[in-house]
Image (cartoon, rainbow, N blue to C red; front, side, top):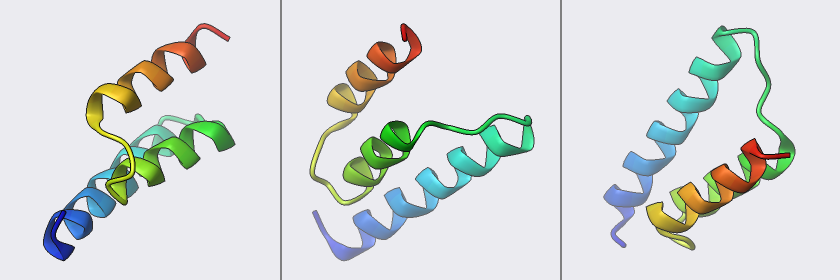
Amino acid sequence: MTKEQIQKRQKAVAAAIGSVQLEGLEPSEQTIKNMKQFAEGKIDAQKLRAFAIVEAKR
């Protein structure tokens, strides 16, 4: 991934977390960790989605 792609993902992750917080919710530490891994290019969107589904079922 390029530096620009990582920056774009980081902004998207920050916006998503902010949106959830504006709704009065707080994402779990694991969800934030997974989203940061996605932003850094360590996991892809499919893996992030799979983690989110597991988290939602808890």
